[in-house]
Length: 233
Image 1 (cartoon, rainbow, N blue to C red):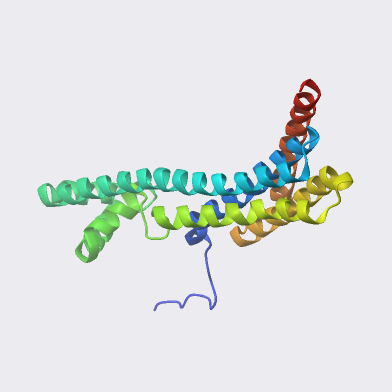
Image 2: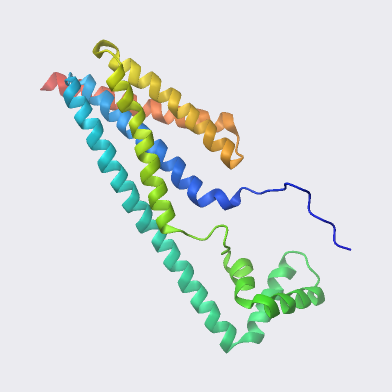
């Protein structure tokens, strides 16, 4: 008798693809734009030059993130498709070997050999390529590469992240611009880390500490460079 699955049971692995792109995009947009703004401000740049630099960083960064994600995830997708094509051909040319190979995977996981052979037979009778893709290659619908989704998610989230320090530039008085952008950006980074951890089911404290620490480091280094360049010029 089959035992019904608990109501409402859900897993988060299906979110891995777009969650990675979203968190990376928003974090990169926030840190890079805030750091650039702080660096230009530290070099005694005017509000106009700071704003122009921030907008340029938003547009260029979003396009770069989209292109980079599309190219990298497309490469992963091409590799997956090549492996699937190779596996499909092997299932036609040497089905007995592929059956034995699949069964041995189950044996290595602790299944008795006779039972493993039966499981391999039943799975291959229903969907041979799907069984080998999942258990031999580690490819499943939940984790397969999606280039367009990753590119659009990265570009959109980068833009949202970059817009936060730009908004602070518009609202903060010039005398408090560096402190305002730094504090506001770190607060947004902490919130971003908490949201990403919550969606992905990860440790929230570790995620918040990680993104705020590296964000603070990036802004501090850029501010120092901007100060030196401003003094030299």
